[in-house]
Structures are given as structure tokens and as C-alpha cells.
Length: 401
Image (cartoon, rainbow, N blue to C red; front, side):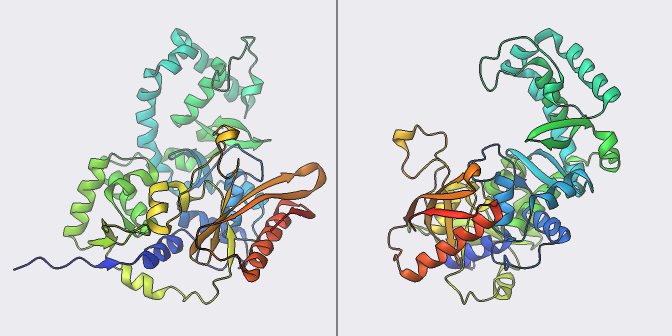
């Protein structure tokens, strides 16, 4: 008997499922309460943190694009007062719901042996590691939350990653769960003992390997809907590909996921992948998009863009972050925001916030090939830029749109 044909999912449906799972189909003008913000971050799983501030911090842009009433003070309250969120590592520094904390303990354990084995770590601390870490922990135990600046060191710095020993110790103790980020001031981390600021989370036992892999893969699948084992493993960057492959085989046998084919935006043979078994019901429940002029500006570190190859497959949008590209070799700009219109990525905006003048400058606007530059589309982009300016506290928008 021939094998049943796998369901084939269209490019448009695959894009809708990803956008919905990642919070980009809901009305961004809904009420932006602290509870709504926490629910949004839970839905996303995490929000990446990045130091570049040419427009706004990455986490603020990511949240604002989904919740236009969002204000950074709400996030600070959830992080530093309510402790409903904590800051740690996924594929990069991220803000994560505290209810997930136990599933960071396997990461803490792995980093405790992995980091000291690196040549970079040994170059900073060498044989003094235990002594420096004991000193750092004792200072924090005695004095409360401290930043790297609270530890003086007279060694000349040779570059961004040439940390003084105390900074390296702080980061190591944070990465292994002994310290937590208590707050940030001007983006500088202040560290405190984890048991002091996250006592309940800190006291939770570490899950066993089976429970950890099950949670990691199940929670990633819920936030992707359509996925490969590699994409599951990469979502939290917490398990090996082989573990994700075993999970998929087991989940398929249990009827929780099914094999599918996903059409590619750039054409060619479809992608072999997995889908949650109820993906069709999820798709049918999504509201029909009746307004193709709804425009959002996305952060370069938006979770929809993070996997560049997936972004190309789902949207036909070839995105590259060019901040670290030499200026002469940039195609679009230093910190370019992709433009999402309805469920399509239609262009790119190169903005710059001039804080001293309260001015948001649009240095360039690029539409994707085949996207018509209609007056209505330009008005929608202009409106999105003005909304961003309001969020940023800019009173003027300059440049041509």
C-alpha cells in the first residue's frame, strides 16, 4: 500500500502560521497592560537584548512592533520589581519568563565546565579564577548589587572583549546561575546573588534530561508550528540536533506532530518538515487579513528574522544585518528595519534617531522588487514611522518617504 501523501502547505499559509505564533497577527493597538506584555513575552518565549541603540534597544523595538502602547517602564517593572522575567542566554542575551527558570539549570551546569575550558577565559583569569570569583561573590554578598564598574582594575584595556578579571568573573557567575541581573542602569548590568532576587526559581530542582528535552522541544514547537528538528534545537539553543530528531520521531509516533511539505517563497522543491498535528485548525482560526495596508516596522533582531534562511523560505526576503559590515560594503544601511505589510515583508527602512533634536530621520527607504510604490503604501509607511517616532519621543520626522 503506497504511503499517504504528506500535506503540502503554501507559502502564504506557512508565513501566516509563523507570524501568528510570534505575535504579529494580533492587533498592535490593543490595550498594553503589564499583564498583556507578560503574556506577549511568554508567547514569544524570549526577547533578545542587544546593546546597539541607534534607534532603540532591540527588546523595546521587538515588543513595540507587537504592542504599540508598550512602554519600557513596564518591562523594567516586570524584570526588576515583580521578578516575573529574568535575563539570561538563549542564542544570545535575552529576557525570559521566570517560570521557565528551571530549564536554564542544565545550561548553567554545562557552562560551568565549558567556559573555563576556553582559551579566552584562561587568558583573562588563568590561575587566579577561583580567587577572583570568591572576591567578587563576597563583595556582592556584603554590598548588594554591583556592576563591573564597582571593581577597579588598572590593566589597560585592549578591546571590547578584553575584560578585566572581575568583569569576566561576574559574567561567568551569571552564566552559571550563581548571580542574576538585578537591574540595568544605562544598559550596564548590576549583578546580585540569585538566591536573593529569584529565591523560588533558584530553589527549584534541575529537571532530568528527558523532561528537559521534552520541554525544550515542545515549547519551541508551539512557538513555530512548522519546523525541522534543526529549527527546534536552535530555538532555545539548549539541546543537540540529535535530541530534537529523537523528539520528532517520538512525537510523530504519538500523533502530536505530522510530516508535511512546505512550499518555498523562492521556488524550488518544497521543504520537508514537521507540523503540529492541529496546524490546520490553528490556521482556520486565524482572522482573515482584510487590511493589506497595516504596516509594522520590525527590529533587526526580531524572532521572525533571526533565522535568515527561514525568512528567505517563508517570505522571499533576503535579510542581512549590516551594522558590522564596512560602510563601503553596506547595501542598505547600518540598522535597517524590515517593513511588514499585512503578512508580507515589502521593504526596508534605514532610520536614525537624533536624540538631542528629538528628530527621527529616515535616511533611506527601499521597497522589495515587485512591490508597487503606490501613494497609499507610502502613506502607510509614513504612518508607521510617525508611530515609531511617538514611541521614541521624537517630535519630528525628517527624510523622504
